[in-house]
Image (cartoon, rainbow, N blue to C red; front, side, top):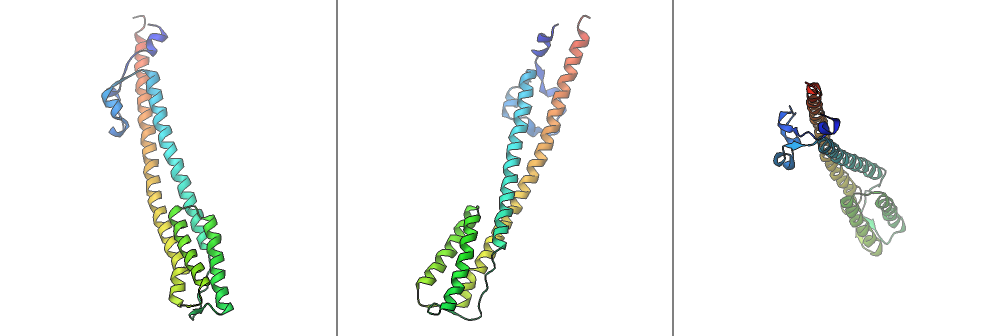
Length: 199
C-alpha cells in the first residue's frame, strides 16, 4: 500500500478518546468519517475560530480598562451651595465640569458610556444657557454622580467580559486536547497500516 493510499484512508472519529463531546459539531455527528486532510482542516478551523473570539474578548477588556481610566481622570468639585447661573464664578464651575466631560467623551469608546456622557454634557450646556439656579444635588447627580454610575456600569461589563474570556480560554484548552487526541489516533492508525504493508 503506497503513501497516497494511506493518505486517502478514512479515519473513524468514534475510535478517538476525546475530552468532551462539544468538539464534535453537528457536521461531525452526521459524518463520522474524515480523510486526514479534512481532519487537520477541522482542527485548524476550530482553533482559529476560538482564537478569534479570544482576541476580540481581550480587545474589549482592554478598551473597557482604557475607558475606565479616562473617567477616573475626571475630578469635578461640587460646591456646597446652589449654583447661580447669573454669577460668573458659578458659571465657571459649570464650564470646568463641562470641559472635563467633553474631554472624556472624546476618549471613551463604549457606546453606552458615551451616550451617558452626552446626556450629562447636554444637561450642563442647558444650565449654562439659563439664568436659573442649579441645586447642588442636581449638579452632583449630573457630574460626579453620573460619572460614578458610568464607571460602575463599565466595571460590571468588564467583569462579565472576564468571565467570558475565562470560558473561552477553557474551551481553547479543551479544543487543543481534542485535536491532539484526534491527530494522535490518526497517527496510530497510519502506523498500523504501515506495519501491515508487505505482510
